[in-house]
Image (tube, rainbow, N blue to C red; front, side):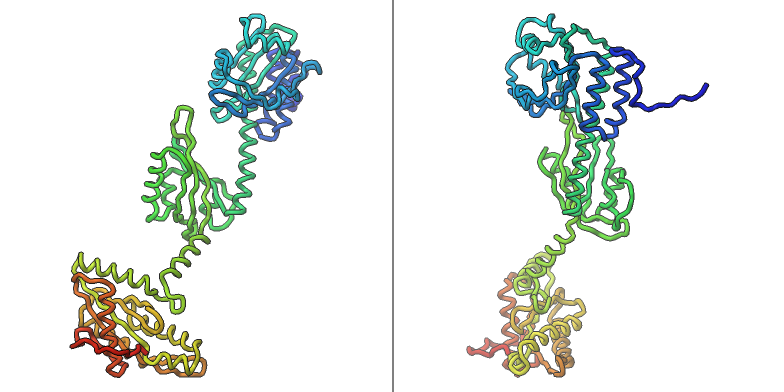
Length: 503
């Protein structure tokens, strides 16, 4: 027996109208176009026409549910096929974005039934007198079948069949087949929504460098677009992986806090979730991403999906880091500024009270710095300050914290040191300054420094008192001829009044 082939859009041409086979063929002809998402909206019109011819009704229509409140419903007559001009209703003012009150029990029951996804059929002459029968008779409808179109478990609209010539009683088999047509329309609506969202996301992605993600509460699976993980653009399918595996891409320091943030958001029960976190890429690099999303729930309130976008915020984080550094560092030398130093000093005081550990503080002035500016200019003076910081940092070798308090005055905080060690570090710094002249253009600028040392042993004090103690020692070093170190406990008496300018 030879094999017969044919196109789906020619199926049913040999069937009689109003037969079950003809109805099935009409649905089959439209299925491929609508299921692929290529048939919106023209494919819907073709489907209604095919269904109308197959069923022999006067009119096939779709009302879209635009808005539904406890008291009113707004609908729009979006699609229609009519067997003849006298049956046509689309375009009439009464059916264009119309709002009706839900104040009649029979109308409320009808709407609630459609919300539950239930079909309805009526023969007008058998309806008891009232609003619904009057409405059918005004439209000259003798029988009607309506099938709700459900999209993502929500009542999107209604597929209706009006017969103005017959009192037709639809069979269960016919209703089941027409429900399939409702599914096709649902799929077309969903495909159109996804297509629109995809276009919107493509635009958003171009503007914000975003990726999409979703977590399915039922399966425990995480889905994300490939660019979230890949360092370079690759033609890779979207990722689907278990939550535990997905968390492996999150920086260890961000995993637990981020999970706690999600739990807190879910307990809150709504709104928009936002969280910054670091992710590893497939190349092992770290990128900063802001996750933005919300939760979708089912009709019973159960959690269904947690989804949204992930925006690359690397540039923002770099700018935040730059501003943070500017707030705590000296812009000329790059070391800690006075405000941050005093804050850090307070932290060490607090720690010494709790743990009993002492620390040392050095205050250092560049001797005769004003003369450097006067002889070589302020550009040279700035260069000398940067050179001085480099010498100090090299001598400390990460042992202490350098800060610029202002002008040519610097501080060095030495954690966990006693008097002898603090003095030794200060002497090392002083000697290194002497032995490391600053080379600026063709000039060799010789430098010396005066150092004041104080050590805190864990008692109650304040940053101002500790700085004052070191400053008195520095004052004494200046009075002693500069280029020397004096410790606070070596200052036998109060410094006499007068100005020994730190210069």
